[in-house]
Length: 269
Image (cartoon, rainbow, N blue to C red; front, side, top):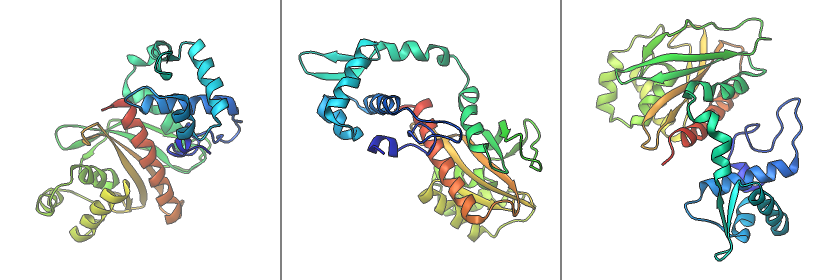
């Protein structure tokens, strides 16, 4: 797989087909090229694009020429470089007025597919609360967690809260003050909570194993804006014992990767 594709979560724009789907190589290559150009501050030449995407130079040139003919990229004949074209904006017009919740929902559905979890999207408010904005589960899951609509939780509690705290990078004393005001069904020791927050700073996700709510295991990550401030939280909640710890960690890492991709799209620098 190309270097560009490797930067994206499995099954989410990487060229790896999701269950029941089959990738078309030329389409995957074209998307990789478009993503590369979107990430560049200046136009790029064919050789640079081919090197960055791992494509053969001739193949890269042919795809770029086709994209230019369709108006998705623009070719500068003097500089021999390419950049995104107005055609990209035309394709995205219907999304420009959409709410973030609507845009994120397909990712929630993908994360829930085939897993015994409810995947939740939380809005991080300005008054130390997170509010449930959306929730999705695989309808084939016979036994699952149900979350009440618009439920509110303290922004520093549970798995999402650990990630919120990690994003703010607060000193230990301030974390202690915030922690002392939290209510848990099975409270962790502050030292363990602090270690979880610092680990989330490094790993980009956090777990809550039956502490916020007894009998529920949660993996979470946050969607941050261009300043690194948490704007949304994403969590996957399962009944204790339904997912091994290794699977929870893997899911947490996937939530982190998806959250970073969404953050870069919704809150560009």
